Length: 362
Length: 228
Image (cartoon, rainbow over all chains, first blue to last red; front, side, top):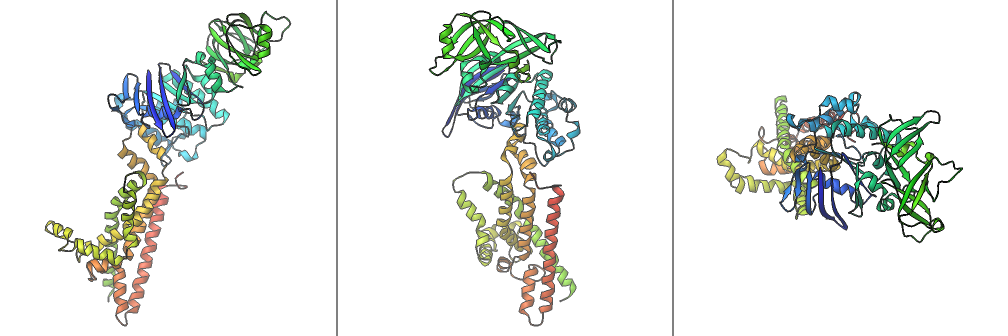
């Protein structure tokens, strides 16, 4: 459990953030300059808030009212930095050993062998950071943080300086950590794809304030999120399970509480939980079930809200079962269909609009 | 002048320079760290004070040392009952060498500490290292080339020290007569130019040797390139 309620000022920038999360992975999401890094630095003890409280797994790390400010080295908060920051004068093996040696044997929860095999570091141990690729460096940095046996792991844009294939690789390792080590992770990112794939809960930051927080699917569908994510990528996330594979057509059927969703083949076994992101601009609205249509997914839905905008484009919040979905349509269409909150409609989603990158393993 | 005397002069010079660096270096590292990392009122003044021996005439420094550390000086008077005497002893020559080389050591080490990425120090702290441990395991090793350079500059300055030494501890053969003082003495006596040349060549060789040693120390510590 992570509880944060802090206020701090840095020059012109004010951060006032309060949130709590017990999720395995909580994402701090927002544009650059929103205060994400300042927030994790405060958790790590690198930046000192002017006032407030930070509690990690029941242990108070900072409390201005009680004059508690635990030194960074005593917080047991792991930190994986954007550019790894491995010690350049030591081998990878020595980097891994650095925090491990400083951890009393009784408090270590993971062995060196386990970390080396989890992160596939065996061949790198004798190498120097300068000779590693970006992905290798980041893996070593994660390993170094883990071996200090932290009670929580902070990851500040760990993929930002990597290319796409390396990003996918590190994401898979992060998922592995979550599943294997049961270590709470705070994941800072401004990339919607990463957050969609990893986050169990999301804290949305804008201009130093928390504008939304809660379970990932809910926050991803919120209008505040649309504003942060940008027009193109705005959308909703559906938590589903793999129902079946259609071998003949190469489709996978995902079951969620609002019905079934056909998507291009997903590499997951039936019953596995997955998460699909559906962009608002890929969702259309029909009043009746249309006939003679190529679109594979026609979902019974209800209009929740219609954004009040005067331009050509309007976001219509829908609910499919209990799952939120957003449709981006023209204001003209809203008027033509006479859409109002509470109206039953059908949401149309092209299967091909949900590509592999939009599906994550929950 | 015999070969034995020459050996004695060289040995004394090395002893004075070695101890000058050995005394000055720890304090120079601490001073460099303060100048590189700390912020406090009066820092500019402190910085200027550290550099004073570099800009003052060495004779003035020697005279100040004589006034402070001489047998009747305020510091010398306190130290003498403890058995610590600087005036007219080789220890005084080492003290003069340490003080004259001090700003050079501080400058080189400070530049090296400035070049160390402070985020690496932050990373070390999140891994459980105290400030002191971070300094000894991250900052200092990464500043190693600057440390060696600082020590070399201090050593070279100590080998060449003349003005402050002769003013503070005089020119006593076997006690305070280092290479430069001996060379000066020979140039002042008619017909001893050959010995002056001889000692000059020796002092060139010593300096080159120190330079080679420092290169080797830097390279040995950091295989491949300089730290990234």
